[in-house]
Image 1: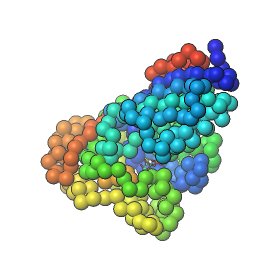
Image 2: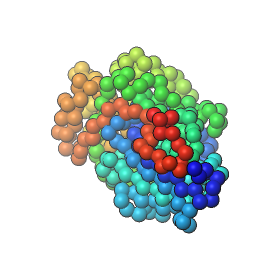
Image 3: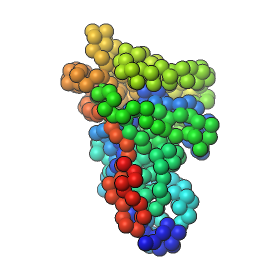
Length: 345
Ligand code: PMV
């Protein structure tokens, strides 16, 4: 068997990872290069929003190749993946370039962030193809280097990313499996447009907001309240702390310099509708990432009613439905990768 130190090494592996939605958000870095977050965060994996990625190290390649949904990717995306593969190559002690083929099962350009599922799948496929045997914590740390929120898509179910002191202890772990709480995320698509300011650039602006320190002061307490609400399956408590932290993060975004204003009229229409439905007694809450779309989360029993009501709001173009998802998983690993598929389920 070839080892990853061989110059003609040609391992291959395919991995699948879910996207995730954060109840307590990651916004701002203490260390941008290492993507060490300003605060801990907590999310739920989304089973039907996945990325499948195959990595093939090929000694004949002079540069890394990135194919996204069957098409050659833009140079900026290729460079980001190539920089990430450089970390994997350093860990494995090998120079070989790779061909990366990645597909999202959710519509590209739906305005749904794919960096979490993309870098979680890439971390698992690339490390397995390079013959590295990483445990879940090491894999989560590696995924963090590609996109912070990707570290939360490595473990399964409900997942907490501890901010940590440094690179070694800043990784995510599961606090409850997917079946712990049958929640549904009905993603209300308001805009399919590509966001103007991506999250990597956005994190760098957090420090310019006068509200950032205020949000960070209560981050640990909000994280604790959220963890407790999930462990106790207390929907009302989860709604209160999730919407509070969503508002806090967007207040930081809106007051940074330059300001980031992601909401559109349709975003606000959904927020107000959800609050009214909850008053009527429906177990439903909202949260919003760096975009205009609204994640409307409800208990499974209310799923059909919530999705139907959302579709009646004129600005809602589509509704994607997802349930709590599992951990990133390996689909196959070529013999030359030296990777035992069964060791990473
Ligand atoms: O992982 P990034 O750099 O794409 O940042 C994600 C930021 C938010 O989606 C807004 C919040 C979060 O915790 O997912």
